[in-house]
Amino acid sequence: MASRRILSLFNTLTRRVEPVHPLEQGVIRIYNCGPTVYNFAHIGNLRTFLFQDLLRRTFEASGYDVKFCMNITDVEDKIIRDSQAGLPADASNAERLVAMKALTDRYTAYFLEDLARIGIQPATYMPRATDYIGGMIAMVEQLIAKGHAYAREGSVYYRIGSLPHYGDLAHLDREGMQVGVSVDVDEYEKDSAQDFVLWKAAKPGEPYWESPWGPGRPGWHIECSVMGIDVLGERMDIHTGGVDLIFPHHTNEIAQSEGCLGHTWVNHWCHGEFLMVEGQKMSKSLGNFFTLRDLIDKGIDPLSFRYAIQSNHYRKVLNFSFDGLKAADASLARIRAFRRRMTGTGEVAGRGDWKEAVDPMARLQMARERFWEAMADDLNTPEALASLFTLVTDLNAQDDRVALTVEERQAVSAFLDETNAIFGGWAAEEETLPAEIEALLAQRQEARATKQWAESDRLRDVLKSLGFLVEDRKDGTMSARRA
RNA sequence: GGCGCCGUCGCCAAGUGGUAAGGCCCGGGACUGCAAAUCCCGUAUCCAUCGGUUCGAAUCCGAUCGGCGCCUCCA
Image (cartoon, rainbow, N blue to C red; front, side):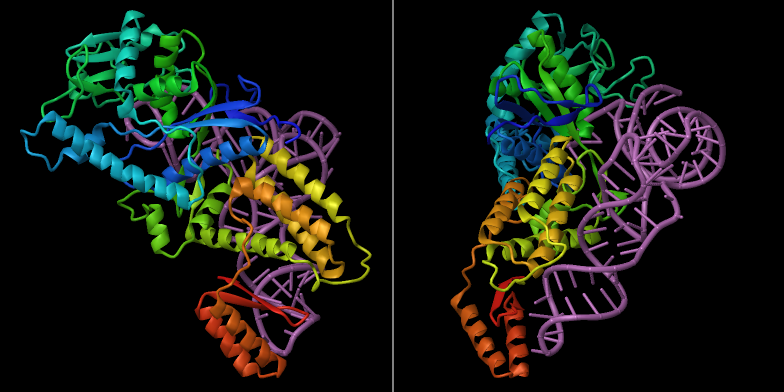
């Protein structure tokens, strides 16, 4: 990469699209709120992780060394609820912790499998909350020492009134806020209803860690503050998550980290929008709640799901639908077909003059510029893809009349690689076909040479039933590809 | 009650002051033994509605209607 592109992103804190100027030359530090591993990730979760992947890949493709941290939350109320269900009342704490870990290990593995299937690259760092209990206790102690927190009956709370800019991220107006009606039974000892818990005293039957305040477990937000600082340092460029995390999670992370550090912690806050399903909120009761596995069971290619998500802007509510998935599949097929065409040497394409002939290299350059301009402008993927499709149409038309040269094809292929590095949907295919398929193709070739059309069609159907689509070419050769 | 987002072709969607990108689907044609792929032609005089500002608005302002989110665990 000759020069690094400056990328601009919407910053939740300022509500404006702003250029990202890295803290360290050429390096981008990103912290992503990862999953709470007590169940399979649903497609809404996956949308957020795809957004983070898009962000990471775009920076990498723009010449940055990306330090990408995604945490695994492996201690949390629902995890405790689900993991302790089968244990006897007198189970030891060690047994309780083991049961919890068994559950989170299992779902962490499933989670990583899902990410791999939709082409999400592994994070540079993947810290787990339970490996940082000591650090969390230390941070809580510091917050107490600095007057931001107070202990009450085995728990510790953050006094939000101690931080003047508390709530800035969510643009909360303390005056107009309507404090939740439901009050947690064990929250009566807080100084203020809005103070949040940093360390939670263990109740009987709950797994716990020892602490200066007695047995307990970390609160819901402290892990990200501790791990973020430990892994990426006292300042980072970008912190991401779903929009639902703006409040309270990220708001409270800021309170903890900045209360502790005494300075700005994160420069750029980026949030991915939610997903609706067929026009409705996704919920189990509506029967429109899907995991990636559900989609795979319906015969959907995980990469089509990836494309369907990435072809929409990350900051807009996306209406997930099976029609949309079909469209995504068709769009990908068009790009892949074009890629296959550009991979060939062009013997079968047109030869001759064309009054509307374009300069493929100039056209390619236009597409590349438009593509990156769109990506650099708050990850405008719909616009970036439009530039790609325009190129596909233009060069298909050109190649039909005036065959592109080998050099031109290679340049186009390189651009497809460049864009695929972000979208992950049209990787170069290797052309090797199973011997059995090659044999059937040869037979069909023979049948066609002798104009045995019925036999030719039969062989085409056989190939189709084996999952290979046949395309005949002008020069008499044919090709097959996996459907 | 407070804060905020969205409404562009059948579906998805870009564009946010200069005269409607792109994808899917659909119709017609070319190529093909038939297909597939591809190409050509055609599909919004109009951007929820009503007003206003402007030489000019989908783009700015106001109102209305409709959908959604946050203020409580949640991607």
